[in-house]
Length: 251
Ligand code: NDP
Ligand code: 8X3
Image (cartoon, rainbow, N blue to C red; front, side):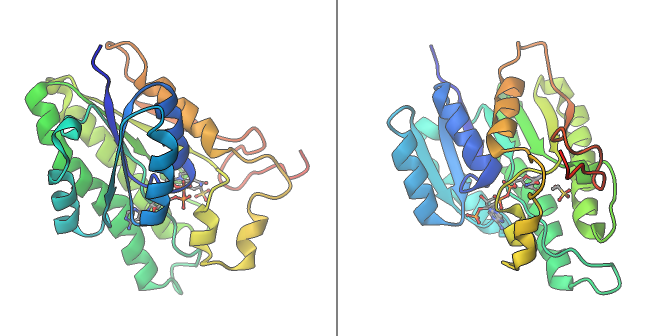
């Protein structure tokens, strides 16, 4: 039986790393992407005992580097069956009137344009084969806007619009496209958003947040459905969370 190959962006941490572990358990070959080479090496070392692993180090903001990295794949990794567009982060939590333009650039360049560059590098082989599965990691922030979330929410609304656009345009090619949209997941996300500020530690306190493994299992569920089933759009909260701002911290 031919084993499938998945390319996961943002595989060095959080949801992406957990998804790499989940896919490896199920015998999926992995192309793991990120900028932190040491982490890529550590994850590769752990997972290559159970599946084939190749790592790619590039910044998704860099269009040239993104295309070059994906074009450099060795022959046994060139056929990509599953693309998990996961790399992304929030940068800052500020009202629009005081937000940092560098933060805005980072969020739009990584979460939106980076996702597009990676997709553009991979979609042609999927259309040529008339098969493939793309999962974009959106967010509850792509479905509602919360105070000070402005540009991060905009970037994730864009991810949902791009997901729908991809699904429509790729429909004639039998390519599955879907979005998984988590609420609060305990990862390095808040460390990045708050730039190491201690406030990051309070984000997941007082309730049970989603764990990256919870999302990884859902992603595996989505990619393991029968050929005629496509999970198009899925919103998942921790039980303690009812919306971006309604969180039961006494649970
Ligand atoms: P983490 O900070 O733990 O992981 C983010 C990943 O993205 C890292 O592997 C990082 O790798 C990669 N990344 C960031 N910037 C770049 C870049 N410029 N180029 C390449 N890779 C990059 O956060 P999460 O696991 O939580 O986030 C994963 C996705 O889930 C994001 O899209 C996020 O928006 C989304 N999400 C997160 C939620 C949460 O509450 N945690 C909720 C909803 C959605 P490296 O630094 O090595 O490049
Ligand atoms: C991450 C979840 O609520 O911090 O996308 O925006 S939230």
